[in-house]
Length: 328
Image (cartoon, rainbow, N blue to C red; front, side, top):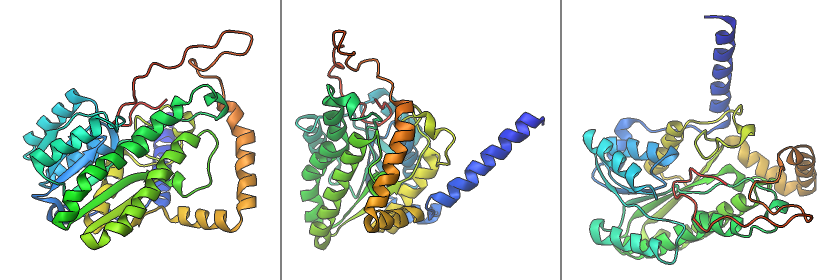
């Protein structure tokens, strides 16, 4: 092995160690996971790629009946074949989760008609977007599209599934959220953080209301996970983070142990500091914005051109992929 290979190996090891330090642990054993999900129905949204796919594979191998939801029907069918070849039971339910008015209610009714109320719901589908507010002056769809998939879609899905779950007297909801919900708002992430925070608050409110009917919920505040969704952000590539499979292990921890929240140890401390010293926290965020936002603030190709030129047309109205793999 030459020096370059040695150096790269050391860097990889350092990132792995850092990742273990900054991310929560608690991945259940295969035996405990099987005891929790074997013979039960688990709905996984955003199942075609990344965390959702890795979670579905773990659950299928543990004996769960896995309902796979994403826009990519062909990818879901391939995953169904893989899970069944491994001895699991899975069904592809392609749907556009950003269409809360039509596609989502139709999906929920199909789930209830064909499979009954799920025992566990993993809300994982999401859309990430990294753009300054200034760049969105003429792009209101940056906010509507992100909110549709990260907030309104999953709310509509649960509003349709919850009555049957509450009548049965049991059910667990795992929300794959972001640690950004607990931290000070970060420049360039306004659409993403706001939409994730909205669903987080909604789910916590629901959990309090439905607890006596046997409904529990876990908010999983993920730090960085290296997936297709995070790949376009260059700043993330050298940062310590989890693989999709490691993140799926935390989802399984949420399913087995059912804590109200799974949070990196440092995030709680940061949230307390932000609350106790908001002025200082805001000054640090402004410093970050001043030093780093300009570096990444190049006008996107489809953003309005400068005033001297005619504005570029907005994006076509196609919604984001429901598997969360196509950030703006």
